[in-house]
Image (cartoon, rainbow, N blue to C red; front, top):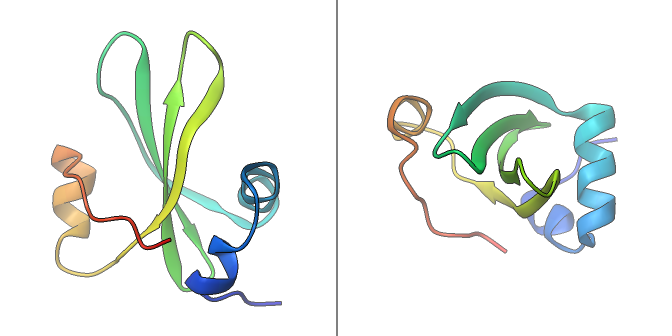
Length: 85
């Protein structure tokens, strides 16, 4: 079973998390301050950015992001990309 970004966007937050737990591959994890970290997952043929609250131990944002040239910058600098959903 493969999903497109559009199909993934139709899922609710709980389903997005469950799918990442089952099928996602963690590419990068970067702490951005004392309370938050950004996780980047590969899922099928696209990437998913997760903003994680360390204090609340929950995902604040789960959105697909575009791969390509900027991906190295994301991993190094946690650049923000436009949301696709």
